[in-house]
Length: 125
Image (cartoon, rainbow, N blue to C red; front, side):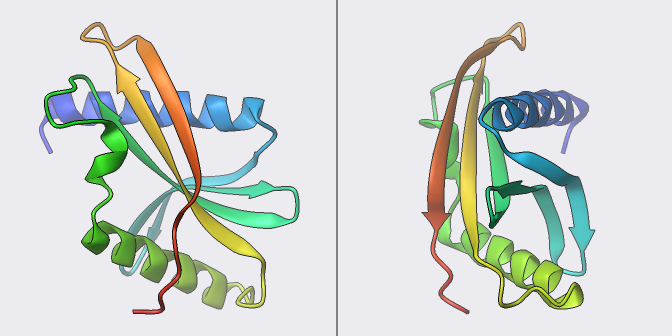
């Protein structure tokens, strides 16, 4: 990832965390590394453990940011979430995967943030 993309991603993740906190989510971890990759945000929403994938774009040329969560990316998120829960003895937890779609302007100011709850179903690949 180039430094420009990294800055866009980091800006989007910071905006997403602020947005989630404002919605009542309690942030547990950000950029949590597992053997399968990374979880952008781990949080609690009430009694539900939430794994939030953050997608950020500065242009609409490829559609809204959430379209970047392909079936392959969904598989990786599920693997990461299951690994996180297994290593903490939390496999019986109520959990879900949300997607936070962040649209930034070219000046990196937030233009729009959309939360899609339960965006990814656990298919136990």
